[in-house]
Image 1 (tube, helix red, strand yellow):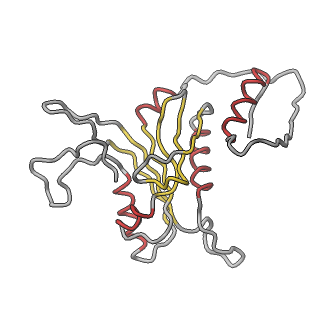
Image 2 (tube, rainbow, N blue to C red):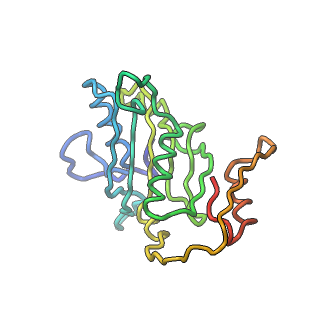
Image 3 (tube, helix red, strand yellow):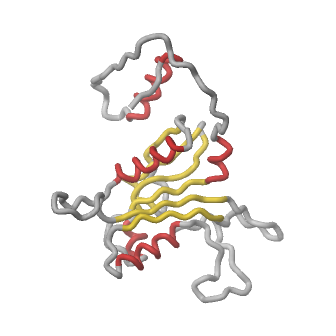
Length: 217
């Protein structure tokens, strides 16, 4: 489910289940989630940053990019007498992604529905692009993959290519003076064709608003 091309085999593996280099961080996190669920730890939030290995060619070193993977399952809130059990869903993991990008001052990303991943659910997965470059995926792990790890609960994840992402982040922060014009907020209701995505609407508003537009939600 996770490989890109042929797996990179190890000549002298330390165990039978570690015969190849990892092409993704997801299997390790899914294995950890399964371990927790089997021990009645039902609300799990995990992340890992590390190298993955892919695109091996004979007599050459494989690509070894740094990847960030986040995986989560369970309730949205900690158990409490005034909280009903609410399982996390697609919008929780999407929110995690948006907050992460806000923290690193990355606001020019785009999200597109994506159904070509073998490890993510085709109906609840987003392709993440920054400056028209794909940097990762966000969404629900497919039930087939979850079953392979003995997980019977929905799992949501984010996978990011950090090497690409770092190249696209503007690290220099420049102060901009507060505008002398008063702030105006517009609440718009639009009737559109069902085929139009929210991303298209936001993109159109940004292009039309130009430099005077501060933000769109």
